[in-house]
Length: 118
Image 1 (tube, rainbow, N blue to C red):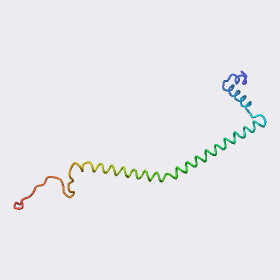
Image 2 (image 1 turned 90 degrees about the vertical axis):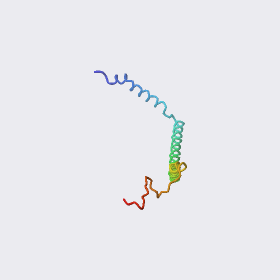
Image 3 (image 1 turned 45 degrees about the horizontal axis):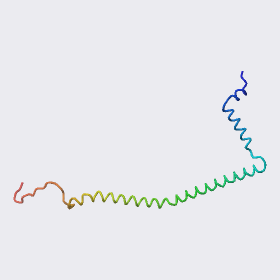
């Protein structure tokens, strides 16, 4: 039966993990300067995260505050567009033909003679 440790040494993923662990051990902060650098790096990262969250919330609130004004503007624009379309549809043929009175029915009519009874 093969030795389990021997298989791990041939495995590429195991070797990569071992190399990564060795590199991580080398980059640990040594002494007081490394600790101070690490502290300020995390502090800067935290401050940037807080600034990002605050800006995101600010933009979200501004967007929510602008929504009623934007809806009102879009509503007015849609009303104007509907009015223009309605005017174009009705106004296109009004210039070509004279308007007929609305109380007259169209069709074929005959005038009956009063003297003649059917």
